[in-house]
Length: 129
Image: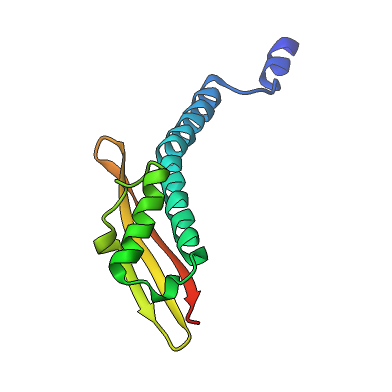
């Protein structure tokens, strides 16, 4: 009788707890491996916009020149095929600044018919001088 009461008080992880914990780790690893490259690609686009903002005379460039500058920077980063800049780039002019915005969506297939939709919008403000 003493052995039975001692066995029921034992503490520790059961097999199901171990399986559940392992499944969670695999799920988060899958999500990380699928989504991190899209965020790294977005970082390249942010760098291209920052490079544009540092270019002398960026506020006076035409739309075609802006697209060419950003595309060249993305080409150097091996990311020129990420998006269509003609559709993604919007230029907004205010009284003292020009705002260059690149907005786009990425659909990342996760598993079977499950996908993740990532919506990115990056902008940089250039002073009109």
